[in-house]
Image (cartoon, rainbow, N blue to C red; front, side):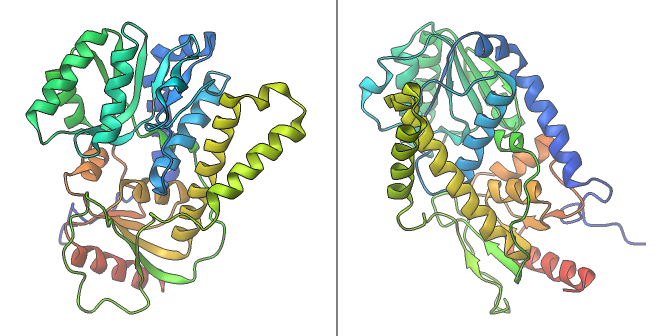
Length: 350
């Protein structure tokens, strides 16, 4: 019998639930050292991802779920990277947490500059970077980050792949630990509806896209989409519900600026994740080069094949934590991913 191709063959005996449980336990272990401080005093979670990319909302909601479940409290303060600086004037006394994701480095410089500004403004205050992927193309930017971290003196850096961990330990004078992506803290997600598509190709259209032509014989009813567009009126509706909820609660604590800011952030994140879950759930099989399509599809138990992004972020994460399962395949090209999808549909009777 011919051996299965290790690049495309799914893990035959591992279920998506086993992957979820294992990575949730790894998150608990990685964050255990900071948990006493989080439980003892109010803390901040900064750099709310106020944009349409579903993946960052999944991370945010995973962070909130873990913090509420384990520390017994939600953040006392949040802000966006581009909020006025006085937003941080009333920082709570506990640790400062920075939102995780894939923007540590110089691919998305506005978030890195905000991160470094927080470290420079609060030297010696415990700051914990929630799990990130690290990528630098510019050695000068890497050296600048190292200087900022050294001057701060109390920075803990959680990373979500081994190459990022090796880079951090080689260049940054701080504690660095491996931790899975925080979206896994959400646990298993239900699919909201039965699928009505055979295959959905959800592929990047931003600066991390690899590109390349789609196969010429791609079926017309296999749509190619991204998930970077908010529903019309989302922000206005979320803001209205936040204000109304605060007033109707008759709770003075919900009327404050910080409480309303967190409520608005969570409403936006829930709506964006819900949109992404509904988009993926339309399909019996998904092809993607987005890390969080791989993650959310795993939380849904949705069969899929994943390609890598422009700098290998997805493969690095999958290799570091073994995120393969019996409905998940890794492909080297779009054509190969399409072949995997065809095989899945034939086997499943699609």
